[in-house]
Length: 459
Ligand SMILES: *Cc1c(COP(=O)(O)O)cnc(C)c1O
Image 1: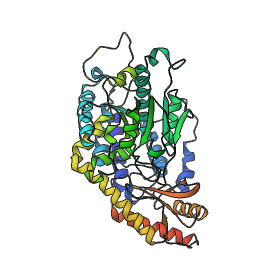
Image 2 (image 1 turned 30 degrees about the vertical axis):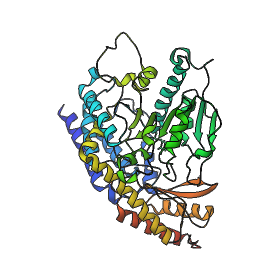
Image 3 (image 1 turned 90 degrees about the horizontal axis):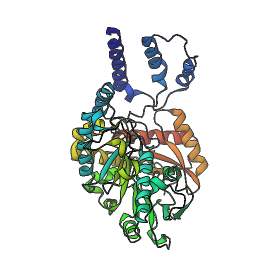
Image 4 (image 1 turned 180 degrees about the vertical axis):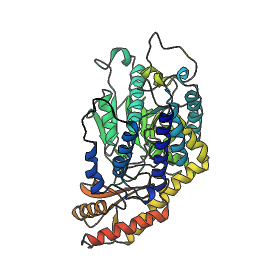
């Protein structure tokens, strides 16, 4: 027993050592660290190995090959870090190993679900009786909301999709913006509505749905909007979309994987007009709220809509009072993700969440200003935490991105925008403040200089 506890304690020391030094790491592993991963290429041991040795191997070989996305210098995809209180409570949550599927399995998880639900709706200013379910990420949160939407729309048409399935069901129209995140299509495929059987609405130059181009259809409709286009951070015109969907007995869903957190910042009221009028919303905890992986959150406006879709009955499952997560999510057994969400919300408070959002947005704006001054073209209105930019053209931008990634001090990825390569910068980690953003901009300009293509043109 003693040695088991020593093992856990030494792991904790190593983990703390990592957290204490990650800011000084390269943003991504170097070639040597990647080559060293070969050490994991072993046959399955016949007899089992010593756990201390296993931990040492994991640390010695694994740690150098991590991406330092919990540090201030990682701008790839949309990747949050981990707030100290999130990591600290994850340590406890991991030791407790609670199954949050049913209240009887974990009273503490049930209680913290109740509190975090209430606080999330409060900080995001969403309707108070909205149901909240924790899942693995925004992809599954989108699928969860859309499955509930599908069954609710079909129920309204007199069809019980859970018992009859979709064969022979009455039809409704799924409406998607041209720049909808790829996980929307994946979700629609998963829940049987089809990736391509959708009415696609053209977007404007920021990737916003053009409300003046909505199709001429009667309804019912399932409209998928987004708060935070993944390249530009743009928000759809929610008021118009809510009017349009609700006039057609429809359901408005919003993918707000990171952008939903703009609701917490009173300064961003123009972006969020009408956002609270949706019927469901999907977001991530592991992006902007800066809890660890994995944590997605599905919000469904009308009580009962999640239960209709996700309930599971079995003789050994008790009838209980309180929120039964396994009857409101695709999962049965599940991690108590609400523990870290609760501890972060309690630590930051309402003003702290708003300040976190504002800090990332200010850092993104500072970076955009420096890059523009250095000759890059900023392609988006920097309304949130995303910066989309380009050197003189797609090819020079690809060379710049390759140079930045080889340099390794910071990391930014690429995307296609209006048919050509562009560079995406996302500020989503709580550690990235304006000075980090400005240093990162200086590194980008230095890399641009080095690619030798300094035909930098001003706007
Ligand atoms: C990241 C993202 C998703 C997917 O979220 P996961 O947490 O990776 O499942 C969906 N939509 C948008 C807009 C995103 O940025």
